[in-house]
Length: 235
Image 1 (cartoon, one colour):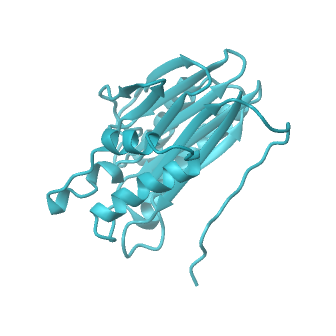
Image 2 (cartoon, helix red, strand yellow):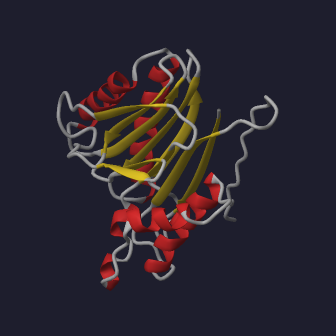
């Protein structure tokens, strides 16, 4: 099998800095974790919050701490530092090669979509953001790694997309539409999903938006690991 990850992010309109922070880290026992946090509000203050949360989680995962424990620790850290006055949503997607599973850890009201075959499962159980209360626990799902597994993760900018114009985005319908297009890779799916949200916002997103698509496919190439980044730099 081979793991593919596509990410697309955009700032809130007229805001120079995104309040979303995303990092990818190799797990010490094998595998990859994608950590995504969305700080309260937007701009620099939100970026500082999401950066703190992601850095805390990444440091713990690198030491072999389990995903759920890392999420709880990040929440307690933010709570004690800011007195429960600020929050952040947090999601962790982990491909764990020790258990041979995909682990989904949520502290967010935005759902996560998991596709196996023709079935689309929605992970949308109530889940509190980190930093607001003591001992906040994430919602955790685990599923076996298998060829064809696709996961869609996004921040709540998707949930807001189009609402102010009376045309709210339907994430599941958009995902199914993209899955029906033959030959799309994960980056093209992430780009297409984000572009749909931007269209519904009439080119002016009312919130930061981040989209992650993770897919397990059949391995047909060499054994070289590759990571490609494309980040515009504003003058």
